[in-house]
Image (cartoon, rainbow, N blue to C red; front, side):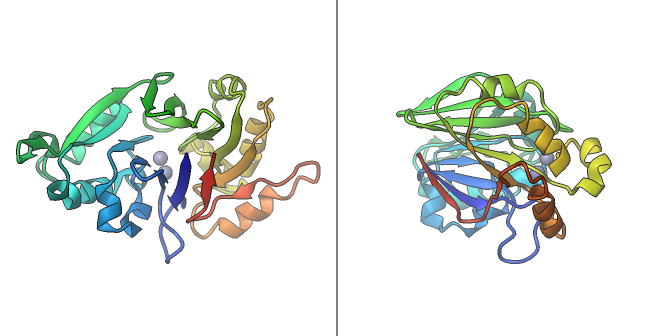
Length: 255
Ligand SMILES: [Zn+2]
Ligand SMILES: [Zn+2]
């Protein structure tokens, strides 16, 4: 599997800051933040499956535009996989005929443009040799992360989450784990805000990582613009720890 980071910022502001979106091989997308808007039309049209972590705008904002742009270029629907409650929210508030057309009801040459597949935590979606499993997240709205397993190795992306005791026993069972992408949206001085908005800061992140009993290369994502320097400094403060990497736009993972 090849995962290309299209966007991994907690906001926008300049060419390097795009919100969350990962392209898996050529045909799968994890979240549809503003990073998606950098793909060419051909690349957009090749995406068959979109896995959404949660309904927040920074993770779905480019989805309606993508669906519209590729509608006439495809002969199979784009399948959006998400929890049932996330699908309900996307249908009610985005593809509702007011903000954007309900593309699940529109067909071109008798082909539906968009279909939804509800998933739940622990459910495996197998696409060829590739396996994608939703893992639990704790956020202000229903949310999941995703475990991507190529058969040889695994990558876990937590999505937006705060302290999450349900996640670690699952991660600790992944024998072939190679990469963990976990968020730290705020700096330590905003710990109260991080807790309230159900995110992490470096102090909370390290306490979470202490629950991990398997080893993996760790990358931190979703840093809020304007806080990148301070969060990065705080992540390298503990002398007893190897500092985690900071996830970069255009970074590629092959596993
Ligand atoms: Zn969120
Ligand atoms: Zn977010």
